[in-house]
Length: 534
Image (cartoon, rainbow, N blue to C red; front, side, top):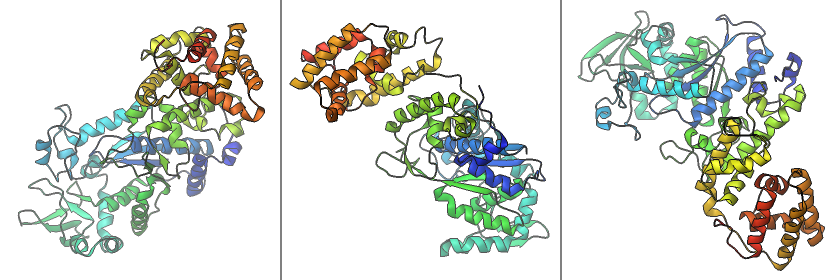
């Protein structure tokens, strides 16, 4: 099923991807740009492996691109641009052959040998391949671009000559942002030594815009005069960012809040070159469980691989969609809620009118297409509780309970549910099991639990989850005052599930089985430790 929306609905949509897309519509004024398409861009530094920030930037940019495609018939492209001409500044901690890499410090990443194997021509090529595999695994539609290809292949030549022509003006933008010592030697051009192959940060002795050359002193003290074209130099990164915007005529790019000053400088440079900087969107940074900024070097964040060990990729996409301009904690404890919020949003999507559908994050995650994946109405929280009471690490054991709730479902016929179950079992074992605290019921609670056990014995197995939920509620009313009913359900969670919070008990009883829940109650009334297998 497709949630088809007309242009009028798209133009009125309030979801942030549409708000961003309207900025691009206004930018082009209803006309096709001279290059023939609207260009979206994301950047990547291949000195390290792709990370969760890479995913976030591409998925958010993709959502804006999809929204733009509902607002305009102008063709679009998305470039994922790798800054692989950057010099290797330090040896990463998470790679082999560190001594070999140390011998190539300062060289462009595509001139440094591959430390992983002999499969790729360089360190940069190896990480670029990992980036493409990473993006391909999520099904992103993009075009990979390499800075090395652009510099060495001549695609940046016109831009570099324009930078040289406006050298003094661009320098005047950059120098006030630098310390006194750095200003004395700073140049936007970084020559690549023809003798050592290293990217040099050296002052320029001569700038000749008419000849298209610069002169500098090489590492051995000799004077070198070289064209700025043909891959003989690269740009300092802020100028490089501006140069890319100018050369490619980028229309839209996102960046983290920490890069706002850099984006402002790059925009000024683009204007000096006589062009228009792209529309931008700055997103907030992620925080760890203590509310501190996540740092790749500190390793206090959460990787994409870690998230996907527990939750499906769509739940991560939802997390990226939600409030991108608000700092959010990115830690393991956000995963269960993100999964269940995603499942709830997908359930609502088919029934929603188009005007509401475009406000549903699931619409943006799936580009208006109703996903084929389904959980059969089983929440991640419910699966966590199932893993808890069943006392097993084997997800296949839990399928006997799922068959009761989703008749006919098997790992083969319901692979999405099987993946959710595997993630829930792993999450329970790693994060929930150790924190479980079962307690014994009070006399009042014992009477209510004994009553519930008898009620459940009299309920046919075929009754619905809603019917069972109502019976649980009515049982509570017989033992607890109206204002105490919240305590009744808390009793069920704490005594039977070892948690202060839990699922709708009707659904859980239907899933785990009437007789199994009765056994749980009987064990609790007998004073057994429900944290141990029966």
